[in-house]
Every structure is written in structure tokens, then in C-alpha cells.
Length: 321
Ligand code: NDP
Image (tube, rainbow, N blue to C red; front, side, top):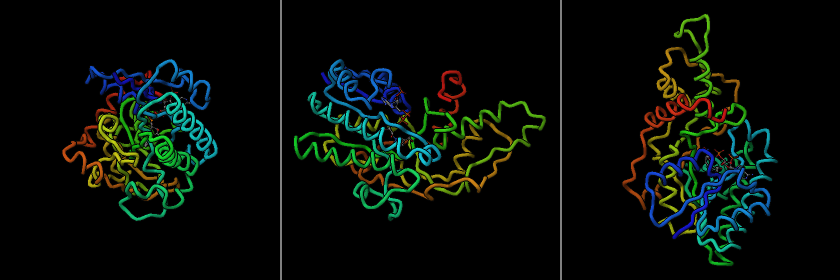
């Protein structure tokens, strides 16, 4: 019997994993989804106590200090230190307690700022990250270094996945930390439900920045299915990009349009170019994933946005906002 511990099990990706596992109900696996109430993973003793209690054989390591562009820009030191501590505590404790496999989570936003596109798995360390999120990026990059070191010294199969921007039910909608999609969903919901003197068609939704940057998104439920596949079938220490196909890349303005459609918003969308854009693009290649899983069907972007907006409306009271 595999015993799988998911760190960060209460977050966006953790909740998606929980939903997929509930549906699959695998007979030969027991899953435990840990949140920060189970253990503060920046603390070694608390991390060790969690592992001693749960006795996992396998770990999906999601726990991290996570935030959008503006949160990162102001808090690089905290992103660096908290994530370094969490990753070191989790990987070393997993090793000491004999876990045979750990799948950790990097991100496409940790790749070098100046690079050629599409980005692939071999380029993680090829130059400094974008200055806006260097704390988060270097902490994440070191997971890959640690994985190789545990493999070289102890033969451990500790590996990592590299998702692009993730969205879905149970996202973090807090304005000061949110990523672009939950941030827009939250603001659009406010605008749509606000009682203004103006008619609906004259309401204005502001897109931060020029609206032109290109982004690749992956729906959290798709990512969860792919991560479970990695846990069960992917036998390499080298990272693997888990991202929708390059053809599914969208502009930030198109994201706003999809969210407006899901809310049935009839007003105007305008871009505030005084706000930062971040990297213009960070197109990642999922060729490695496609070579292993050629037929995986990603959920259509608009459908996934519709489902995410529906979840937000129905769970407004419990959503992190
Ligand atoms: P969330 O912010 O939704 O969830 C973060 C999770 O980490 C929560 O379960 C939280 O616990 C837990 N956590 C945070 N700090 C601690 C701590 N000190 N001790 C224990 N647990 C802690 O993140 P996501 O689900 O979005 O992200 C999951 C992974 O995916 C992360 O590693 C992230 O870096 C990566 N990623 C995310 C992307 C995105 O677009 N969201 C893009 C690419 C990669 P609790 O809620 O109980 O406090």
C-alpha cells in the first residue's frame, strides 16, 4: 500500500488533487492532504512530527509561499527564506524517513528572464530570473539541485514538475497576493454585484497593464491528473513541464474577455498601462510531456474559466479573499 502525503494539500492544487483522488478512489493508495494547520513546514521539528505521524512512502510537495507579481515584487526576502526552509525540511525529512518518491512543484515563472522560446526543462538554471520574483525563483530552482543531490548521494527518486500559471476552484482571491485569474474573478464579481448609479453597459472593468502579455494556463484539475500520473509513472529526477499546448497561449486581455463572458458582464474592458506587465511572455514547451502522454486532452480554456467562476459564485463565503 502506497501512503501519499500531500504538503500544501489545502491550496489550489491540493484541493484539485483531493477531488481527482476522491473520484478515482484507488485501492492501493492512501492519501493524506496536509495544510499549514497540520504542520508549519518552515519548522523542522513540526515537519518531522508530521512525517512521523503519517509515515508516507510517497510525497507530493506543494506547500510554498505563493503569490502573484505584485506580492512577489515587495517580498523577495520572505519568498526566498520561507520556501528555502520549507523545501529543505520536507526533502530531508522525506529522505530520513525513507520516502521512496517525492514530486515537488517548480513553476515556469522561475526560468531565466532572458532566454529563447519556447522554454524547456533543460533551461531552468541558464541565467538570472526576472527581477520581480528572484526570491521565489531561486528557492524553487534549488529544489532541482536538491533532487539531483539526493539522487547522487542516496539514489533517491525525488523529482519535480514545472506547471505554468494554474487556476481553478479553491484559488487564492486575496487582492494583495492573487495571481491574474483569481484577481480578475474577484474584481469582476465585485463590479457585477455592485449597485452603481450607471447602467450595466457603462460599468468599466480595468485590466492591469497593457493586456498584451501572453500567458499559458493550466486548469488545476488537469494539473492534478497529470501530477498523479507523474507520481505513478514518471521515473526520472529531471523536471517535466506540465502545461497546456503552446497553441493555447492567451493574452491577458483575452483572459479578461473570458472572465467577462463567464460573468455575463455587459460593460467595457479597459487597460491601465500605468501598471506593471511583468514578463511579456514565458512560453513553455510541453514536448516532453507530449512524448510520454500524446493523447492527454486538456480542458478547453473558456470551459475551465466558466467552471472556476461558477465555483467562486457558489462558494463565495468560504473562498480565500
Ligand atoms: P496555494 O497558495 O493555493 O496553497 C499553498 C499551500 O501551501 C496551502 O495548502 C498552504 O497551507 C501551504 N503552506 C504555505 N505555507 C506553509 C507552511 N509554512 N507550512 C505548511 N504549509 C504551508 O498554492 P497553489 O496550490 O497555487 O500552489 C501549489 C504549488 O504549485 C506551489 O508549490 C507553487 O509554488 C506551485 N505553482 C503555483 C502556480 C500557480 O499559478 N498558483 C504556478 C506554478 C507553480 P494553508 O492553506 O493550510 O495555510
